[in-house]
Amino acid sequence: MSLDDPYIDLKGREFSLAELDADERTLLNTLRQRADRAPPWHELANFWMKLVGEFYDGRGLSRSQVRHTVLYRIAQDLASRLAVEQGVARVPDYRDEIETLVRTGSRRAASSAKPRACPRTC
Image 1 (cartoon, rainbow, N blue to C red):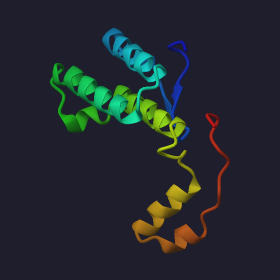
Image 2: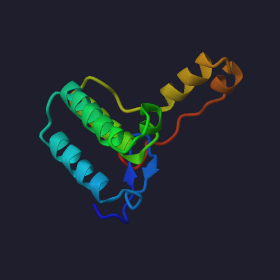
Image 3: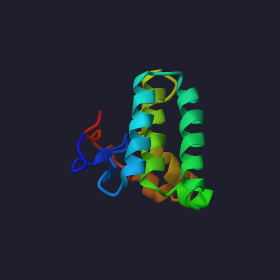
């Protein structure tokens, strides 16, 4: 994957890799290599959370700020993909959107929600 290609997560959201600096790209490659080895998903989750947290601690970001970085979101998606592959999670779909609408009290919006096609990554 080149820097011109966006990373597309399980929900179909695109993240530009061009925004990542050299150190972030190195860390992303480390995370991808670890995910490719297919450890139990929870081990990958523990690994990336510690690694990404420490990386951005060194840059002076708060944990709240870290959660909004592209690298954090991609790492989270890599672990989610592994969880789906290992059968401990499912790919997000319209049912998640309906659940969110119902939980937030928007029953009218939930009743009119229509299933969408699966994103390109399915």
